[in-house]
Length: 219
Ligand code: AMP
Image (cartoon, rainbow, N blue to C red; front, side, top):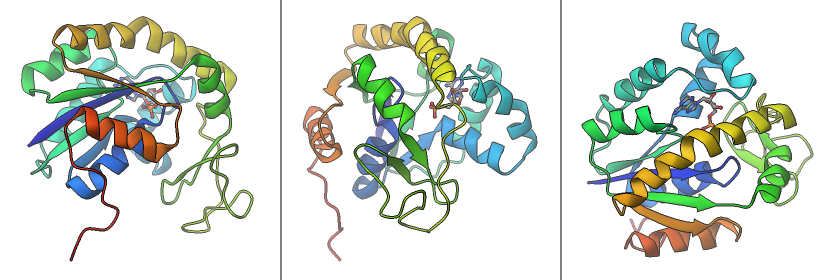
């Protein structure tokens, strides 16, 4: 059983790296932001509760987040373990998490702030299949269309300069101290997030003593 937390500033590639890590190791990727975005897109009651807060780049209340995380982990579909992304984001969430689950490692993706702005403001998302694009490094073949499913790409509502400022402020004030808390417990592996995704993944695996990435599982 492997239980990892992935942390890093906005645009550092948490989603991509979690996906790569989960792919061949049969881990479950739990992204709190994705759960909220799904609910907003599908106009659920939860979506209505969080939409405005998310669009402004603010944090959803701890009670609600904890309820969602507990509910998701209680599904117990993670026989081999999980990678949790976007949680914990402050001291209270970290305490809640550590009370209930032991952690095998924290992956910390490091990215300088000018690169964060460059990446986030050029990010595009497929609302249909969830594929992420970047107009600088990872353009879709046809402008504005998803390579996988052909759906029109959108900009995340919180990928605006104003919302990004709010998210970076929260990250620096509330989330960085969590990282220090984990660091004291010697859980944290600092990884440079600037190189291409495959290279970053290889560094993560080396740090966690995991086997190299295997795109296709042998049949
Ligand atoms: P993310 O995709 O991780 O950047 O999350 C998108 C948005 O979802 C955040 O800006 C928050 O509004 C909300 N959110 C996600 N995770 C959390 C969390 N752990 N605590 C509070 N709000 C969260």
